[in-house]
Image 1 (tube, rainbow, N blue to C red):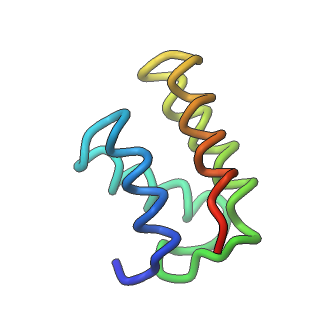
Image 2 (cartoon, helix red, strand yellow):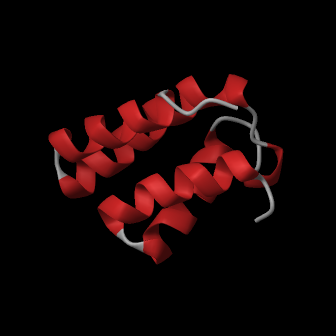
Amino acid sequence: MANKLAMEVEKILAAAVGDFIAKATVKKNCELIGTTPDELTVDHLPLLAEKIEKSVSFFSGKEVGSGVAEKIRSIKA
């Protein structure tokens, strides 16, 4: 994955759920919002954060999910 934004999102997620799940979560949630990790842009981040928050909250709890989403929303290009 060459896209710096996608790598940053993955890094944030990996701290909460581990590398393997982070990679899969970024890929799947990018698909859900109509893009790929390689094509991810800053404009996609608010919607991606929302989707990832739901995924992470389901498995790791609401507090972890909202923390991850907040970090994703704060990424600057």
